[in-house]
Image 1 (cartoon, one colour):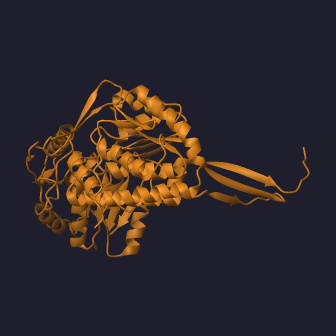
Image 2 (cartoon, rainbow, N blue to C red):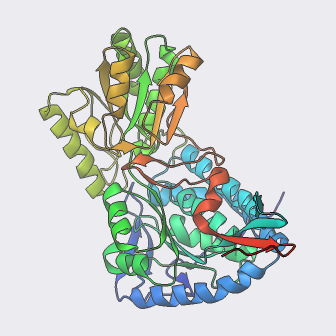
Image 3 (tube, rainbow, N blue to C red):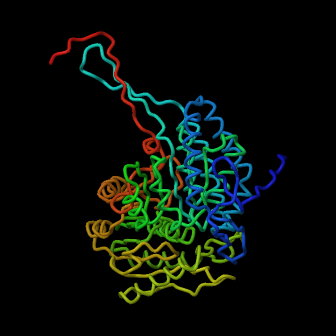
Length: 488
């Protein structure tokens, strides 16, 4: 059997400008387990001088990295993907302890993190496109070049993957990265990735991780003169703030969602209910692509509600370390209080509460799955909940279902269920969203997909063949092979 790697340590420091050191802000972050409040690490936080140091080093290291042969860069990502899988148990355990991921969900995140790392090797080759011309004896070429230094700001809900889906392609394409993980997930969202890439042989200075509070270093990082791209995954209000402050930088923003899953009158109700339950409660509903609203045709509404409630009652809550647990803790008290407030306001708006429960667990953050019946304007349907809550909305036919689905400021992920795939395709093309899934859950882990949104859910696409657009610039070069007359 292969030898178990020695676990990573030293998470009281962060990789800044090629050296692991403590942040210089004078403040300390206590990183805790959301299930039982056990202390995981004490991290002296980064300040603005640390951001400056990281950005300067990134700018210097990037130039040499961009000149490195593609096969050498590709080898780093191949090794890093292998390291992620060899350390899958260690990384998964960190996800369970730091963000409350169940064991099964943690395993999924580790696997897709490895996949997106391996995919980075495919982004290292130089890309040259030939463009047609109507000028005799002339040739046009478009060269794709690294943008330079990329700022990545990542969330806490799927921290390792949502950081790495930007970090891996940005580095592979020849950029350097300054990564700021969320304060609730500094280890899984940044420090572990830095350890992996360091072990894989990534040159020093190319990846710095600045662990700090948004109010202390966020604006400074976004406005810094050296990075040319800001990649952000998080809430719509914060995304709007970044867009207002970033200046002329290129932006890739995946923001909030209010995912509708539409059940048409000819749907397979059992399968639709299973996918709706999964989409609503996976990782405690703390996913931007979660099924926030289930919009059901009135002709099948009552039967669907019965099936949905029956399946939801079977979900097992508790300690995320237990293999049987399907719903673990909400990330922190602020998030928990916000979820419960939205439920209370929805009931005040006229929603009917079918399933509920008080928080349990050592820290009181394990919230039972909630089911509400209401229209599209009750709080839990109108707002992104980001918790284990589903609101079922009745629709009077297909056109009403479409109107309800689109009656939101968001447009990230969505789904439609019908036995007629062509009908589903026609419906999907009219949904105002970046992603629509036919006869499947709204929550996806396909690293080849182009994740992104419309309306207030962001700009840009993450993943797939589009990922290079965010982290590169284009250089048009024309070649005139034979002299031609110049006419004034």
